[in-house]
Structures are given as C-alpha cells and as structure tokens.
Length: 385
Ligand code: SF4
Ligand code: SF4
Ligand code: F3S
Image 1 (spheres, helix red, strand yellow):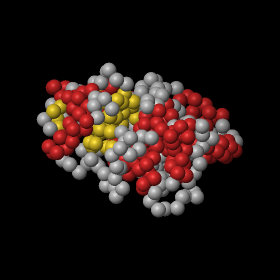
Image 2: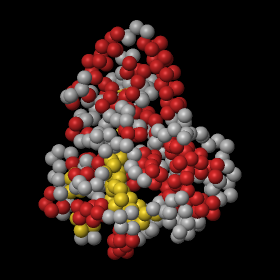
Image 3: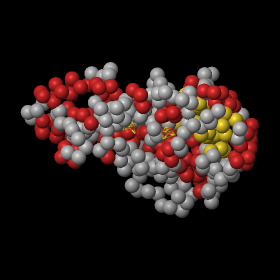
C-alpha cells in the first residue's frame, strides 16, 4: 500500500477522527469541502452534507489497475493541485493497489491485488487507466501472465464502482487509432454489466478525477454523466464557449502561422487547427499544474483529446475543422470575421471583459487541507455561489 505518511490512518477511525489526530482544523476541512462542491457545481447548501459524509468515512478501498497505456494519466493525477494526491490517498482512500505508486513489485504486487480484491469484495472502487487489447486473445498486454482483459474482468467483478481515467480507458486512444493493430478498446466495451464513468482526456485533468472520487465517497454514487459516460460537471461545455481567445474568434482575428505577430498577441487558433469548437472539456477553467496553463493558453490549438476517436476524427491536427468534415464553423467564422472587421477592437475589448468576469466566476480554487500544527489559512478561497 502507498502510505508515506507520518500520521497513518488507524484502522477503525473515521476520516473526521483521523483529521483531528493530524491537527487539520475544522475550518480548513469545511473550506476543502466548499472547494470541491464548487468544482462539482454544487451550491453552498451541499457543503455541510459533504463534510458530514466525508467525516464519517471509514477509509474506502481503491484499486487502480494500469493496462495498455503510457503512464501519462498517473503522472497527471499525482500533480493534482488541491487536494494534493497525498491528501487524497492518505486522507480519503486506501490505495490498495497501484503498480506505479506502490512500493511492492512483481509477485508481491500481484499478491497485494488479489488480497485487496478479496478483502474488499463488493466494496472497492476500481480505477482503470489504459486500453484493453482484444486481438489474438489479448496477447499484446499481459501482466503476471494474465491478459489485460482477464485482469479487468476479475477486478470489475468485485467493484462497487468503476472509473475509467483517460482516453485509453475511455475508448482506446492512440492504440485504437486506425488501423488499431492490437484491437484496443475502452473499459466500457469490455465491462457491460456495470456503469463506467469516463474521465476523458489524454491525459485528463487531475482535479476532475479527484472530484469524481469525492462525489462517489460523499453521495455513494457517481456524478451525472453525458451520453458518453463523462461527468457533466466537467464535460458539460465546449472549450470554445469558455475560451479566453473567443473574443478574437468572434472578431475574425486568427493566427495564420505559429510565429506570426498575432500568435504573440493571443489571437484565435482556429485557422491553425484548433478543435475547441467541437470539444467538450473544462481545460480553460481547471487548467493544469495549479492553474499554470493549458494547451490553448500556451499557444497550441486544442486537439480535441476528450472526444472519442480524436486521433482519427480530429486529424490533421493542424488543419481547420471543416477540412476534417462534418463541421460548419468555417463559414460562420469567415462571415463573422468579415462582418466584424470594422469595430473589431471594441468587440474584443467587450468580450474580453465579459470573458474575464465569466472566468473569475468559474475559476475554482481548492484550499489544501492544513498540515499538522499549521495555522488556518486566511487566503483559502470560499466556495463559489
Ligand atoms: Fe497516456 Fe493519453 Fe492513454 Fe493517459 S490517455 S495513458 S496520457 S496515452
Ligand atoms: Fe479558443 Fe480555439 Fe475557439 Fe479560437 S477556435 S476561440 S482558440 S477554442
Ligand atoms: Fe485536450 Fe484540447 Fe484540453 S487537446 S487538454 S481537450 S485543450
């Protein structure tokens, strides 16, 4: 088990008792719940309920299996800003198996997996990263002599809930791109008798994973999802409708090549391939690495990585959407661009102000749980309205 804590959770203690022992203040804990409620799109009224539910938790078991993948999703999750993966792992869940994060390896790791599944049968949460190769009896991925399909089916059989993290677990990702030589599929194409929540993205944003797990721990069920199994709190809006460059799109101001002056001025990346108009994701709001940046923020077009089969449907990555077929954005963009050529500056300014207000409202900040002995933070943000 991954537990590098100087304050181990005493068996039988609730989360509330454990936090008290660690010296985490009630104030910080409630702020932490408030931040998560904001991420989940819940109102202030949900904060006391979340606090009560989490406080009474008796450390639930989580088993995390990694199949045909690149480890990028794990790398993304362990960079969760708030709560840190340390808080998540040590204070809310018992990560009983994760072959990247656990100290054990080889036979010891496999024994840990079997033990965790047996001890917590019917109660553990199963997190999966990676796709499942089905061609040629699944020989393209075996761990401990067992195929990915067998490992997944066994782990899913005893799981209370299943979360597929990342594009690989969602639908297969790059392994499933044409011609898909290994026959890679996502978790929900193998597990048909239980609902699977898909945290889309390559990789997904860590805070979305965290919030989904906390929703499950709080309410005993997964968050509401769209038709593709993606949580609506995160994937309910197009990137294009949340993008800080949207004012330039509306004004017909486009970057034409990556090193032109307009690229440096932050104009819209639609002409150099941005798939934001066809991609549902919270990237502009949540961002990565404690809100440091995200692809479009760094000057790169969105590749559409939260959308199923994006390696085939969103390519060429540096081509405009209509070149790919099925989108009507081009005509709209050109018409808007021509119509707004006059007075574009005023339009950009007005939209920028509106976008700024929108971003400020939506921008969620999660307070980190206090460390033992540390004074309560006066800068911890409040949950959003
Ligand atoms: Fe790697 Fe992307 Fe698959 Fe995650 S979804 S394991 S980042 S290829
Ligand atoms: Fe933002 Fe891309 Fe939409 Fe332009 S096309 S506004 S860069 S999401
Ligand atoms: Fe992926 Fe586009 Fe976000 S490429 S990371 S959905 S900006």
